[in-house]
Image 1 (cartoon, rainbow, N blue to C red):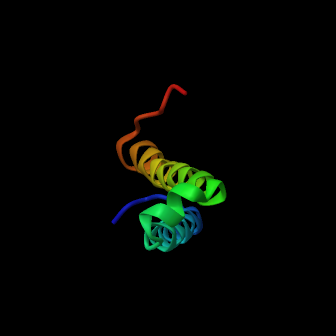
Image 2: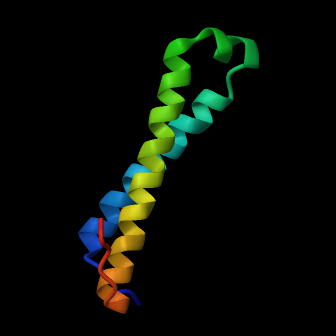
Length: 73
């Protein structure tokens, strides 16, 4: 089992799940509707960024707590 803070892990996973839910909702739109909707396109981009950041936070926490590797940035 990992040594990372459970609260941090749960928060990051909740953010990732929320972003995935939004992504699924957006990609269920028809292509024409999606392409016409500037809001949907920007929302999809933002949701992808949130998803990647949340999962990266989990990965960095695991590297630091379980492997002693500290990220440089």
